[in-house]
Each structure stands twice: as C-alpha cells, then as structure tokens.
Amino acid sequence: MIEIAKCKYDFSICVSQPVKFPCYGDLFLTDYRREQNLNPPPSRSQGAHLPRGSGSKTQSLEPVNLRKQDSILETKTIKHALRAAENPILIQSRSELKSAAAAWSDSECLGLDTEFVRERTYFAHLGLIQVSDGCSVWLVDPLSVPDLDDIVKTLENPAITKVFHAPSEDLEVLSNTLQSLPSPMVDTQLACALLGQPLQMGYHATAEWLLNVPVAKDLTRSNWIARPLPFAQLRYAALDVCLLPLMWTMLDERLKILGRETWMVEDCARQLTKASAPTDLDQLWLRFRGIGRLDGQQLAILKSLAIWRDEEARIRNLPRGFVVPDAVLMQIATDRVHETEDLKNISGMHSKALERLGTRICQLVRKIIKSGAEIEPVPPLTAQERGELAVLRAKVKDLSGELELDPAVLATKRELEMLVRSGPLCQIPPRLSGWREQVMTRKLLNIMGH
Image (cartoon, rainbow, N blue to C red):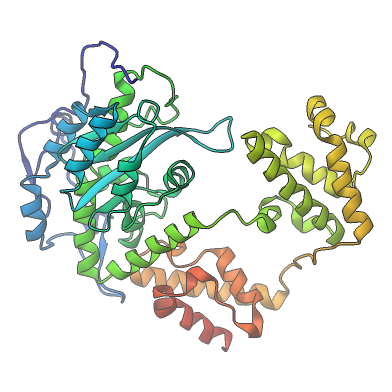
C-alpha cells in the first residue's frame, strides 16, 4: 500500500488571492509569481500569439471572448486544482476505487496521467494512475488494487472526455496493462501545437504559457513502483494531472474560435489508432541507424535478427538493447557473421549473451545466406528529387507561417521525402491526408505536377 512519509508540508506553489489578467478571468495565481512581479502570458506583439482560422489572418490573444470559460472557472479554478494537488485522494482498495469511479461518472471531462517504470523491462510496470476533475485528484495504486475494471469503464465511457498531455507512452502502458484505451480522448500537447506552440511542448511549459503557473518537474525519473511513496512524489504526480481539465477548457475554446476543433479530433483519432496497432515486426529494421550502407542481403539479415530479438525481449521482458545491442546486430549483419567463434570478435557482444544466444543468431544468418533472400536497398534521392524536396519544404514553411504553426505540425521531412519518392503513383503518407490534405497536401501535389 502507498504510505505517506511523515513530513512538514511545504507546497512551493501556495495559493493566493485572485489576480485578474486580461483574457484569463479571475485566475488564482501564486504568491511566488506576484512577489517576483511575473507577468501574464505575453500578447502576440510580445512573441506569443493565437492564430485565427486556416488563412493568413491572425488574431491576438487579447481580447478573446471567454464567457464560457468564465462560468467554468467559477468552479474549476487554478485555486481549486492546486489545492486538490495538496490533498490527493489515495485509492488503495476495491471499495475506494468504486467510490471514486462513481464520482468520475458525473464528470464531462477528466484529466489522466500515469507513472511507470520501464528502464529494465520490455513492458512498462505501471506504478500509479492519476485522475482529476479539476477540483479533486485521485491517485490509484495498481499495486494495491489489482482489479482495475472501474478504470477501464471510465476510460471507455463515451460521455467523459479523457484529457492527457503527450499521451503516447500512457496509451502504450494502458493498452498493455488494461487492454483498454481512452475514448474519447484529447491531447493538450497537440492542442497547443495546433494553436501555434512548439510541437513537443511539455506539460510544465504548457502550464506556464496557458495559466502562468510554474510546476516543478524534478521527480520525472522517480521509482514509481517502490513503496512507500514519499509525499513529494505523490504531490508531483497530483500536480501532473490537476490542471489538465482547466487547460482543456481553455484550449478547446481557442480551437473552436479558429475552426480547428476537427483537426484536433482527427489527430487524436490517429493517435489512438497507432496505439491500438500491434508492433509491425517487418518494419523494426528501419529503426536502425546506418542501414543506407547495407546491401540487400545484409538488410535481410538485419531484418531477421531484429524480429528475432524483439520476440526474445518480449518473452524475457527485457529491453531490446539488453538482449543484444543495436550496434552488435548491425555489425553481425554487416559482416554476415554465421559462426559462433566469429561472434567473439564483435565489439559489445557480452559473453553471457554469446553463450545463450550465439547459436541461434548464427542459425538465422546462415538461413538468410542459404535462401538468397534480399531486401531492395533504398537508393539515395536523385538530384532532381532533392531539388523537389527542397521546393516542398519551402512551401510547407510558407504555409506554416501563414497558419502560424510549427512546420512539423503540417509535415516532417521524412513525410515529404516519402511523397517525393512515390513519384507518379502519388502515394500520400497517412498523416498528410485529412485536414492536412485540404490546407497543404493538394498544393504540394500541384507543385509536383500531380
């Protein structure tokens, strides 16, 4: 069970009297910020802005009609959220989880987060599940409550919007541990990106930008499966989720003003689709660095070894690199090593791994060599293709400037290269369809003459 270590509470973000800033209503900020004379989020003229619509016209953060937000802020203020983080509700029994789930069922929106450990395992070990409605924070201990069916029901409740921030790892953990994914789900990091902020904006930076609230981030690498958990960790976990409902209320309002709420729905659906898809074993070899230097047979060897290593890692619940490091597999494929004696000369090949796995590795290499299997190497771009790629990247940069978005929100270099390589077939990468096809991809295809 989770126990709270006895200590004098020192909450670094103490709640103060309401401080009014334009556009934000009566947000309860901290004595710390007032004493330091810190300002509210800057307006567009100061470097932070809110794009408007899908064209080149933009609108400053000030003023924004937030009447809907004002009514919500009456009950879900920063003050309530931070006080909830001071006194999180620990869920350590089946009955406590049922009571919490009953409270969650009355909410239209819940913030969620997970804490886990995976440094020495293939599958992450779930250590904590945080839930908040903006007024209370619940910390569910999966080590004390192994039956998490009520969590699953909440995740799958269509009447409750589940709010995460950068949820890719959370989705993986929930899928592997609970065989469930949240739906409907929204990602506040993605919402910020669609409002012109950096694509990888962290939770703590989002709290600063959107709410002007500093949140500590010094316990990210804590051991979340140790017991008892010290109060500092519990507070950290609570702070990581308590502001999410309020954040989403504000972000949702801005997305609707800009007509980008459908963009958000589409991209979140894509995240869930990706999270629910099994690992594509046939594509694992593409993750290795330096594959452009290998010939067809070497690539076939690497592919076979990568698939085998992944299966071995799953069975033993070890990180892939703990089974055999990437560099070792690359060297085996490059040298076509098929005798165990020769494996001893591979730098980084541990003696225990050689004893346990050497015979199987050599069998796989010999099988590829005997079969004559090859993978067609991906040729480098031609001069014409490189020129075409440069033109497309410039166009994406121009369009992202008009929309006031990070260019990577529209398209990555890799996606544009895939588009160029498709040639006359004009195969659109999945992420460049949908709303991106409307605002960007069709223009890129016109440039390419398609």
